[in-house]
Length: 204
Image (cartoon, rainbow, N blue to C red):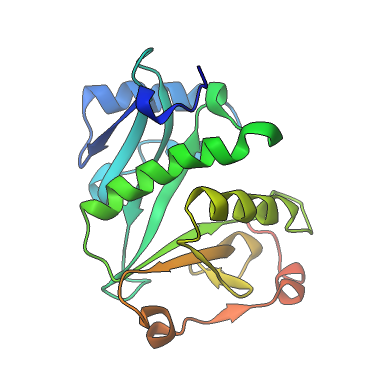
């Protein structure tokens, strides 16, 4: 049986901290990677999301992937970030041969989060790998995500700003999905090119 068998998954959506979710967070924080601080209690606050979901493997009870819907004053009222603070647990990290199947699990989480929200426009953003000057991982991500989502997401132009500082980490790659046609062009957010992004400081 594939580890990405959707019939062997279920999704729990959390709106506030709970013992069940904190056990999941503890598993996440066991990994000491470069994005670890994103998932601490200080930086991943469930109450700031309009739903934060975890996909579990039903047969084992293990968490597979998690992420939520987030909006603050940086975005218009009807625009939100999708799968904010996305994390895939090590056992369920994708290889080249099963990447599309893995993304279908992420897409099942997205579909669940869309079903409980009413935003007109969703963004998925991703910063480039630390120290990287190319978008190779992002290009690979977009390709498999496009297949897994059956083309629901449109590729954005350049980089969009996701936090106030003018540094690389605050300008991220993005795709978007309109629930109301024309929502993205009506917003028309500022973006920068890859060449402009390279010239910025990396940021802390």
